[in-house]
Image 1 (cartoon, protein in one colour):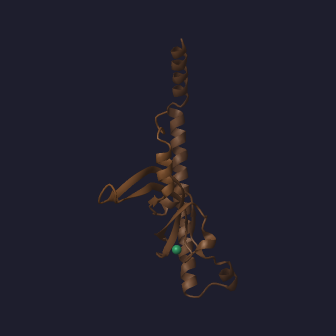
Image 2 (cartoon, helix red, strand yellow):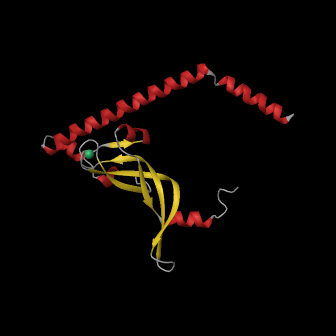
Length: 171
Ligand SMILES: [Zn+2]
């Protein structure tokens, strides 16, 4: 009896998200991708112009007063790595808060002499560049600007998290 009910519910949900709705969702996604691509292009373009004006000394005093260093622009997320700026080619900062694929890797010569490393893949969602003031906020925006948003990070916390919960994943 219970399974019949569930089957009926599944059926109605499937009907609800039928062809017509799927098309609407697809259309929305396409519009959103287009918006993100245009926004990335616009932000990178403006940063290029700014960088040109900065390096040739054409910025106004007011603009120079608003110019920020990398540490002032950054979001302060948990992980960060240097990354080439898509606008000016100098090094900016790629930041990430969330990680996935946590793993422990050991390397060494013997059982008594080895190193344990906690590794994970961080998925970035923030990029800043102190050289041209480019700020990209969001994973999709990073991808649209041509930045590879996933980078490997090392942290002892991963070892603790993985070894501290031996039953994790078996529940
Ligand atoms: Zn830059």
